[in-house]
Image (cartoon, rainbow, N blue to C red; front, side, top):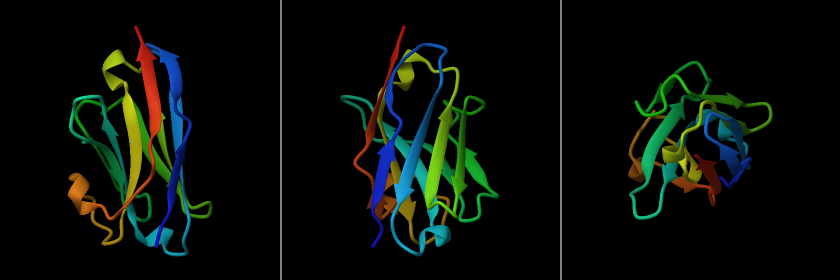
Length: 124
């Protein structure tokens, strides 16, 4: 069983930056692929970024590529999402998720553990 707790959300002006953190419980965190997703009101949950178990491989949605960076520190059981050059369309609740299979999946149904989410609001 893995529990995930996100933090770091908030209100920022367009062009600004935020760093989200996701702290995980459990001794097997380092085996999991970790993903970030987001959901805006009225929209489906969408993929943002994923990182493999070691941190050596990452993949991003086209909408955030070049602006967001996913990373992890397995010694701290934490995954991060550095968000730069934020846009109003990045406004959403951001969720971290764990895939115990270790695959770098992009679909929400492929993840078996989820955090409660953290709100990110970007003002224009």
